[in-house]
Length: 250
Length: 116
Image (cartoon, rainbow over all chains, first blue to last red; front, side):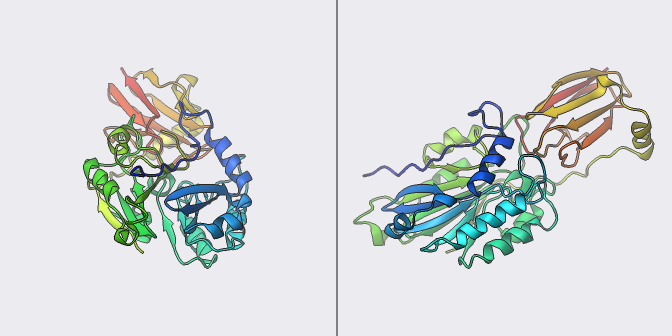
């Protein structure tokens, strides 16, 4: 097969014009589901289950698994979820219970609600407590809007502005978009002025791709972001077509 | 395994938020704004995306959503902090003009105040 696997999950827009799920409905849904998914990668094909329905046999049979959590919104106290911290702790308990343990955790943004002081500490310490070696963070707009990303980028690293980060794991090339900085009125996710470079990134294979060449002619690709790509999406989607998105539609 | 960074365009310089002086805040606290100059934010929309007011009007935005929103002028003439549920932000328009604004967290939310 020369085509890349397409990764998709139902998006949960909080902007009008999507599938009608608003943020309140989304937060309620996330509270119910335990704010997380377990992804299992097998031969470059991904499948997912919500944390509370993780399948040990499915994970064991896969090349590797990872957990995606999102929209922890630490500091949120509204009606939609009066105990955001409790929901996060419930997710942590479910992550700790996974057997076999996932290879890593990806947080796809809105770690905090309105950049509350101390929220980044709560989430990073909580994820460290799962004993899973690595947690990877992708920002949501709640994490960066108040200070232009200064605290987020200082803590979690990344390009100095809009852009992306990437890493390879067991033949899969992961790209995390940082597209929540410098929003323009009327627009959506902002990829900056150089989408061609992202297109190039999308064509990159993992550095260890040669080791898998016989069984995987092309690398699998996972692209994650908090918000959709908006105007830039059409251009970028030609080469970065598989997307895992949580939080917003676009 | 580690992130490899790929920066896009550099971030624009931060702009200092413009706030009302104390006399404006006191006025807003003691005399409720007339209904014609309050814009409610609900369901990811400014309920009156186009509002026309006379010079000198203080316009108040009130967030009734559970999401955080902001009210930021596209020319940086004014910039609210993050408004959580039931938070409000006011700005007094002292010069005629068309003031476009949007939510910096949800940029599909846009509006304008026409000051005559």
